[in-house]
Amino acid sequence: MDTLPDASYDAIVVDARDNDDGSVTLELAISSGTQKGNTIDVRAAGLGRDAIDVLGLPVTLTVDNGNPTVRIEA
Image 1 (cartoon, rainbow, N blue to C red):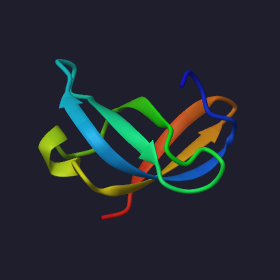
Image 2 (image 1 turned 90 degrees about the horizontal axis):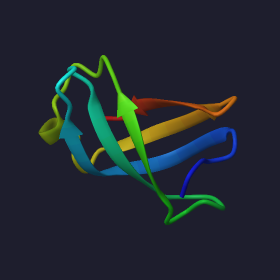
Image 3 (image 1 turned 90 degrees about the vertical axis):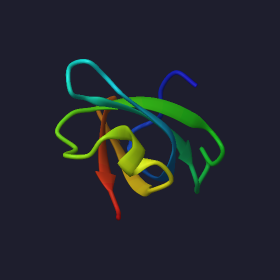
Image 4 (image 1 turned 30 degrees about the vertical axis):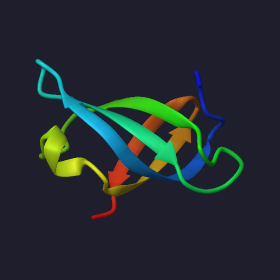
């Protein structure tokens, strides 16, 4: 999947990897709505957690004007 339409999505972190610049790339599986089952990679900065800490956590993914933001729910 290349992009998601602007909206908020419930998702789960199914994979994550630390990047050299301190950001974390999250592979998110959308868990509800019309996009349920789709996955998307999002690069997140400033999480304050490493990749191992976020595996399996629920998140809210918000896409606004094509720009994603991630809020970790746990």
